[in-house]
Image 1 (cartoon, each protein chain N blue to C red):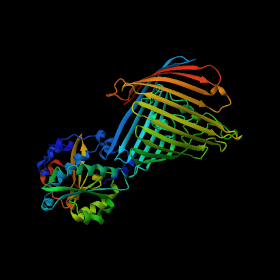
Image 2 (image 1 turned 90 degrees about the vertical axis):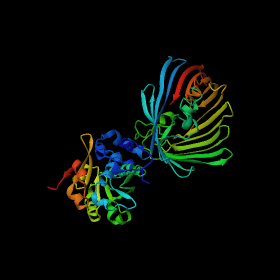
Image 3 (image 1 turned 180 degrees about the vertical axis):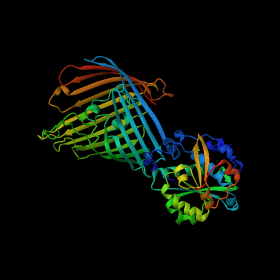
Image 4 (image 1 turned 30 degrees about the vertical axis):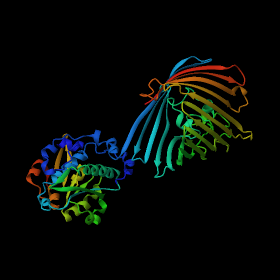
Amino acid sequence: MVGWAPLLFAWLVPDAGASEVRPEHQALLLLKVASYDRNRARTEGEPSFRVLVVHDGRQPNSRLASVDMVAALEALVEKVQVDGAPLEVRSMDGRELARRFAEVQPDVVYVTPGSEVLVPGVLEVAAEHHLTTFTGSEALFDLGIGVGMLASGGKPRLFVNLETVRAEGADFASDFLRVAEVRRQE
Amino acid sequence: MLLAFLTGVLAAEPVDVTDIALDELLEVDTVGGAEGSFGYRLQQVGVSPWLHAYAVGELYGETGTAPTFDLHYFNVFVGAEIQDVVVPEVQLEYEHGGGEIQMRYGQVDIRTPSDALTFRVGKFMVPMGTYNETLYPEFLTPLPDRPLVLQEIVPVSWAEVGLQLRGGAELGKGWRLGYATYIVNGLEQRDDDPTDGVVQEAGNIRDMRDNHLDAYNGNKALGFRLGVQGPNGFSAGAATYNGRYAIEAPLGLGMYGIDISWHPGPVLLQTEFFEAVLERVSGEDRRTWGSYFLVGVEITDWLEPVAQADIIRPGLDDPSQDRERISLGVILRPYPEKARFLVVKGSGAMTTYGVGDPTYRAVGQVAVGF
């Protein structure tokens, strides 16, 4: 069960996701985008599609965002499948990702806002195990997270760090890349 | 279909994301602060808030003063229940048309798995008798005016800042034992110059409230109430309070009391007795006591006549402050089914003094809790 205690401290956090894409919406986008990954599609037949939400346990806003995202994903468990596979949702402090990876074995990783210091470590694990990384935070996307689900002009927009997703082993269909804003390393 | 997902009303059959159009997902408006706000998030994790209030309007007059209308209270309750384990609540008091604004209480109850123990922290109503803690809102009180003892000895409404442990246990056959014990900053007599060596002592207890911060006297007051509830609305309890009240001398204020209430059928019987002892430097304590006895009869569900006798002995050298009072009143509930907490009350009271002529007071009151 997700603890409520972090909420007591989160009042001090200034942005509170004021202009983010709603977690419920991010959750659907994440699953939809994941379905465009042709490399991931080759693993079809696995018992479930696992989304791991990682947060920085030392940051109240990151913990709070994890609560939101996990709730949004869990709300879809009974409603949505990904390429025929039922959805599973896990969460953990990103600092434990490398150590506990085998225990969870996710298909994709969502990194919550406020987890900036964890990005290098998460990207390393993601590249090693071929996981696509997602975020709803522009700051995290700028730090290199693979797919950003960000608000722009009052609508959700998809952003892709091409080098990152390639390093993570993703092969996105052109249908997806056509609607996403692709960022290449300069 | 997307809207159905986002609002959680999708049909029972799971849908594959491959059947959802990406374009559709990208056309939904993003929501800013309104739903990305703390309130929205708190609601998502099981915080159930509430907003309630009560309003009291009066017209009163008494011997020697001009009759006046008074929006006596318009108090707001804001609280929440968090997963059935934490219950914070604040009562914001707007008295006399907003001329006096304060926090009557602001407390957080932290429940444990056992009914025998709940922690209460913050500023809470002192469990000295039942009136001060649970009966004071005017939509619950039988008469418009409080008994004298509950103005001058138990200074209703009396709240203190500190920590309280409370709970209870079922005794069987409809009986329940309850307790409350607390440690608080406590009542403190004001001292304009707390370093002049002049001890301010044995003053008006009511003026000792609102000691929200112990700036001078670090001693804490302790209190305890043990009560029992039974069938037919029976309730009885005994309570005590002890603490240092003077800033420049270690003078104690002790308060003791009993309360009994019984509601057999349409009849309400209610009495409370309190005594307070304020130590003086001279050793001659000021001892003050008071009591009231109230009887009401609910003739119908909308009509309830009430009578009350109360007495107070302030323990002052001036016997003119010794008082007895007889009050007669009536409670009307215009909509007993639809709006039980809408009451219209009227009362007339005669107060006699140790010295001097009696005084008379009449009050009309409308109170509603909502």
